[in-house]
Length: 434
Image (cartoon, rainbow, N blue to C red):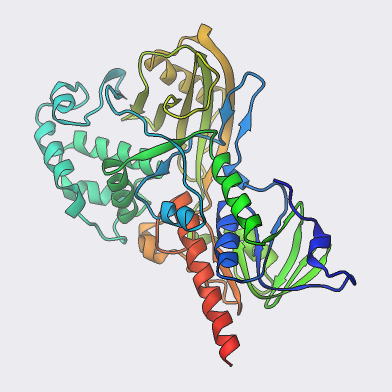
């Protein structure tokens, strides 16, 4: 889309224009925040330092493949989708098939238990472990753990069988993108695994750029002043200073920034990095291949590895080709060798039937930020994350994937965006009534 420039924030006489809400950050959280606020009839200005979309931007290669910034999946029944719909955006794509999904463990590749038949035939678990896993999966929805318990502690309370533990650890990595089950809270693992076992996920046609473009179009239609390449230098209560001058705002929402970045731009605000938890990170490998390899999904059980075919079901590759996304989930602060990890991911891809001679597109990213914070058991899990008003600066609110008690990953970004708009709306209503 074509964004407005800084001149869009002044009147014809060149006087600085006031707005009801200023949004700092133009990723998913910022775009949703701006759209929701404008749809309430508020005047809104959005500032993005670079290009709209943030980590949700997709790119198309010369060979015709559309690549996200690492493997992305939208949970169908999670907290984010209703927010997208409230913004007027209806995601389009397809659900990955679980039929024939594989797991790898101790050098063995076998059927990943996804139903009675695959559980019985799977070589990935001992015969002793299978009935216990089947019972736990069947009763999973009502096994709600405390947020102050780690995922690993929760697994131990569910079963004494190491095979069952290993399966739940793998499911936690798959659904939370988190490798450290000893630190991440059990409520997050339960939430995300429940979404996966329920309505599952959707891979998006054209990548997550679809959401960026849809939200940007809805924001513009609602009257939002969008300023791309507009670096904000300082936020204080009631004022946003940027490269083009300054804007007075009755409320400011800092959206999608890391805890440290939010503290650096908001005058007098604390750094909430410890409260948010360490960033979630992964090494990723995108492989575009000719034809349709034999298998669509391989999950590491004893190693933090993932491989899934994203086209099909989504439209991301040229005709006659497929697109696979691979990941190695990283523990907080983990150091790993670039070449060894890339080779490990390529070996994992071979389990799915990807032949080296068929690969026509390859993009490896050594360390990618998946989320700016990880809910920790030591902090009480989801309920212990910083709230939208956690900066403690009057009229300045937060949104992002580390903010608020609802959702994980993009779902947390979108849910906190809606909560921040509600909080800002209450402030404005109180001011109007005074």
